[in-house]
Image (cartoon, rainbow, N blue to C red):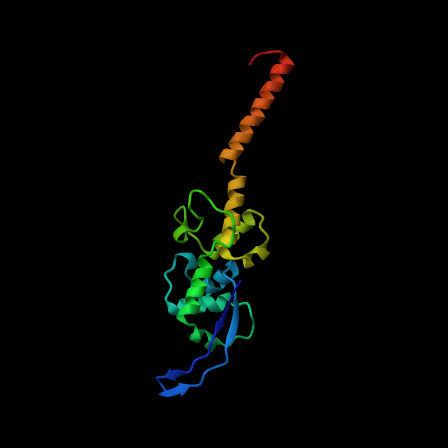
Length: 184
């Protein structure tokens, strides 16, 4: 979870040609999660992970990430460059100690095996892998890492599973050799 404070600074409204008095500071509690992405995608009807976002889209995403209630909409207009950088750094954080040697992630460039990844695709993965829906509130990178770990561990062709299968076959062969008094 990321906590940022938005300072309300005095602004100038060019339409009315008047200064707008500063608002009180607001503390936002943010979570970069599948739930946040699904909210954003329902507004823009675009895949979040593979869409270039302008400042308005980023501000909307920060609003979708916000966990605390009753934050006035105008608060998001006061997001500073430092706030946006903090959010971006938080979104890029792995949020886990797990790492993969191949450097490929399940969401590289918002695609996997050529398929565009949307919130519904990630929900599909969760359902297929029996991951509880409450994990939709996890940091997105942590959730995607969990999905990848489960997929690797469930893959019958993974090298570890091949080693286990070979060991089981060797044990069965030795048991048969002993039972039938043969050499192979």
